[in-house]
Each structure stands twice: as structure tokens, then as C-alpha cells.
Image (cartoon, helix red, strand yellow):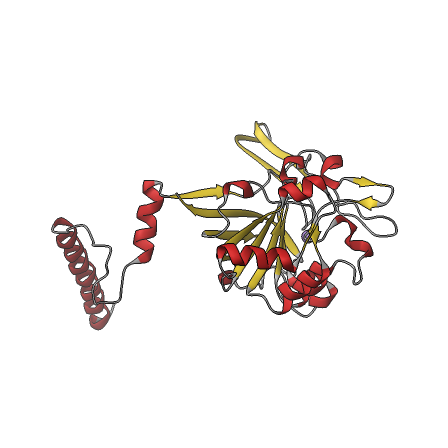
Amino acid sequence: MSKETASNARMARSDVSNARNALERGSRGATPRPLASAGGTGVDTLASFVESLMSGSIDVIDLTQPLSEATPMIQLPPPFANTPNWRTHEISHYDEKGPAWYWNWFEGGEHAGTHFDAPIHWITGKDRDDVAQVPVRRLVGPAVVIDKSREAQANPDYLLTMNDIRAFERRHGSLPEGCWLLYRTGWDTRANDQKAFLNANETGPHTPGIDIDLARWLASESPVVGVGVETVGTDAGAAHSFNPPFPCHQFLLGANKYGLTQLANLAKLPPTGAVLLVAPLKLVKGSGSPCRALALVQR
Ligand code: MN
């Protein structure tokens, strides 16, 4: 070691030791940090948030359906290809294949269970983001919940319209910038029964959705970044014969917006004021991904 290097090494050691001493002095003499940060930059909202989480005044609601071999899957008619059911395969279970560990591998589609639709999923969004490219900033945002469960129970083909949005806005104020529109229909109670969930007969599936004009407005004019539903897809069961077909997919994904499906527990959210967090897997070139969707709610 040269003289210079040895001296540098001694200096580096002494820097580390000085820093450690400073930290210890600081922590011994430390008083609890006030929520208002120093320097007049305003309240430390993240510290205030953590305090609310710990005290339970902010609750975390799981909007995700369990993902298993029993999870209902969309069924497209011939000649279209379908996604397989979710399957889990055991690798080892504290046995001779792995005496101290349990793990599985799984197979399943990108659009399985509670999942996220990326813009590239639809032909209108083919040059837009895949699921790995979606900016994470847009995966966290305010949520508004429109409850049409009574209407959907009376009419499984119920379509949400612009009038429903206007009525909601008159009561609860304008849709906030960058929000997620969560559309409650009561369909989550059917999520453990493929037949009831898809609700198909000889004329095709009958599940609630969004009408063409509203889908167009949500995509092109509204402050919404994504639409979340309790059904198997963002479009109505009968949307295959709309003109254009599947307007939510066509307009929203084409406008670089997102879909979120098979949600649970929307009944536990207020109409406004909740915060949605969506975490799809960062699948390179993925068209979507099973995801965990959570909501933060003020108690
Ligand atoms: Mn999908």
C-alpha cells in the first residue's frame, strides 16, 4: 500500500467513526420530530400519514379477489383463443425435493382474476405502454366509487351512462384530476362461481358495463386515468355487439388509460376520498397482469 493510499484509508475510517459518533449523539439527545418539517416547507404529510396508519384512522382495504384454480376466467366464443385457468404446481413441500422449504410455480394468463389492463392490450393502444412501461405515478390516485348494485341486480345488462356521472357529480362534486372510477355493481358476490359470474345464456354473457358515449367521454374528456369494475372485464357482457364493440377497451386503452377488473370490497369504500394503489407485475411486453389492488380509507 502506498503512503497516500494508507493515509486515505485512515481518513475514510476516521470519517466513518466521526459520522457514527454524530449519529449516536444525535439519537441520545433526540426529541421526537415534529410533524411540521423545519424550514417552513409545510407539514410532513408522509409522517402524518404513517401516524394515521398506525393509529388506525387510515384503514387499508383489500380490493383483490383470491387467485386460485377456482378463479372465474373469461370465455370467448369460437374462433377466438381463450386464456387457460390459473394453475399452481408444487415444487417442494418440506420433503425430499426441498426439506426445509415450500414453494410452487404457476401458470396462468395475464388477464386472470383481479387484474390490470395495459393500453397495449387493445389494438387501439398497440403503440402505447405495455404493463412494464406504465408510469407508477398513475398507479396511485384518488378513487371515486359509483354504486349501481341495485340497478345491476334488477338488470344484469345495466349500462352506466353520462347521466349517472352527472348525478354523482351533483352530489359529490366533480371527478378529481387523475382519479380512478370504480364501478360497483354487486357482481363481487358471484366471484367464486364461474357460471354466475359470467352469467351467459344462448345470447352470450349478461353482465353490467358502461355505455358507448360514457366510454368515449371517460377516454377523451374526463380526468379519469382508469376504470375499475367487479366483473370479468371493463366492458359489459353484451359489448361484443355494441357499435363499436368493447367501447371501454377501444376508447380507454386507446387513450393510454387503464382497466382494472374483478375487484372486491368496493362496498367498503366511500363515494369519494379513498386512495387506490394498484400493483401489477412488471411483465416486459405484458398486456396486463394479475395485481393486488388496495384502497386507503379515512376512518
Ligand atoms: Mn383484461
